[in-house]
Image 1 (cartoon, helix red, strand yellow):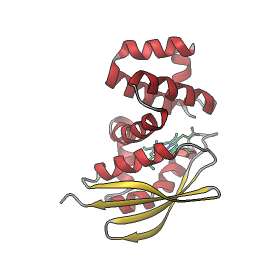
Image 2 (cartoon, helix red, strand yellow; image 1 turned 30 degrees about the vertical axis):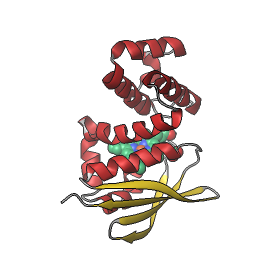
Image 3 (tube, protein in one colour; image 1 turned 120 degrees about the horizontal axis):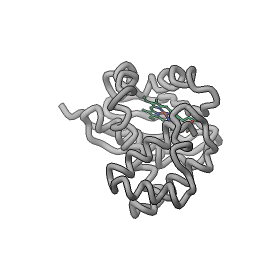
Image 4 (cartoon, helix red, strand yellow; image 1 turned 90 degrees about the horizontal axis):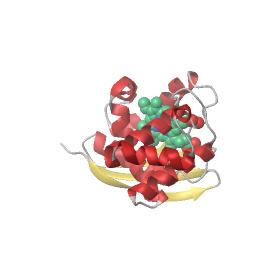
Amino acid sequence: MYGMIHRAVRQMVFDELGEDAWLALEHKLGIGPTELLTGMVYDDALTIAIISEASARLNLSVDVCLFEFGRYWIKYAERGSLASIMNFTGQDLASFIENLDRLHLAVGAAMPGAVLPSFTTVSKTPGRLMVEYRSDRTGLEPFVLGLFDGLITRFGATGDVKIADRKANVIVFELQYQDGS
Ligand code: HEM
């Protein structure tokens, strides 16, 4: 994955455990600043190794760490240079999710080699969304659950997300939420 993702994991470890914990992680994996370049593509195996080491240090299972990283990514993207992309993507949860592919298309245009996910809203009723997730990768469902959970929070709602169905190549997520207002 792009170094941008590694930098976000680093920031999460920094925030939770401080700089020394991150430096120890780098030492263990034999990596350094070269593996954190925002605009470079790295093997997914490295991304997974970084997440696994982070989860061990945070005392979380890999799946829980991926979930927490999903939630963290939403807060991370709200800050700094990514904030305007997030603001353009949608003013409410349903439209934001409907525009996720557009967000990734825009981002991907400047990121050759990115392997981007695709999301399709297949059902939309008040307080409930069914969203199909497609990816060339496997095993990132906990990350997606955390991302959707973070989006529910971003839009001031409360609720929960679960996996409703798995078909070949498609995972269906169900979001149930109540607006905070
Ligand atoms: C400014 C906001 C965002 C940016 C810049 C961004 C960018 C990226 C990038 C660079 C990757 C990695 C692609 C690669 O290295 O191959 C990625 C992956 C991913 N993004 Fe986003 N993204 C953003 C927001 C979101 C949001 C809000 C979601 C919520 C669902 C999301 C869902 C995902 C998922 C699930 C992946 C994993 C890729 C896969 O499934 O194969 N992203 N994104």
